[in-house]
Length: 197
Image 1 (cartoon, helix red, strand yellow):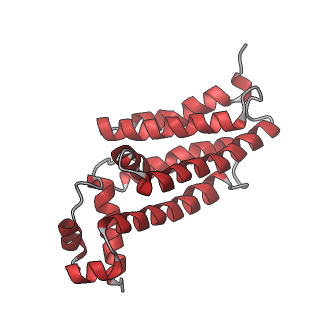
Image 2: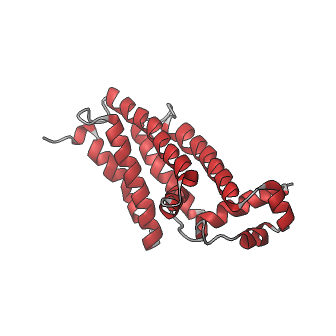
């Protein structure tokens, strides 16, 4: 059985992703979690403290699903890992009633001028994101799957920026087209057999 703390965290994760931080009020959280205000403040000092905990939970989940199970999965070829990366994000978006974009990207844009409380962990997360993806690209270069004239970290950064942009476009247009074509486009650009010039 879920504890009251778990109920609050689940409600906050869904509401902040769907509505944003500012538009998610404590009253909305209480209604969604069916927890009293006194119980809410027993577990969390503030909405900001709750959101920081939610960010940490998002990161823990993402690290397992994406960093470990996909980008660092040696049973998959590097190309298969990149394709699975995009497929996983498409599946994640399909799990929601609507398309709400990337929770990390949404929050980063919304709170970028609000000080370091949210910016710092989000910045660290995106920096960490590039490590397993850079290693994946490096492995692809070493085995001759990916072109060797571009730095792995540069390609990893390109994939991150493209993926975040595709998630934003999915939210804007309510369409998965950019994610559907994303892996094919990226792999076309970095595949050693497609190298030109």
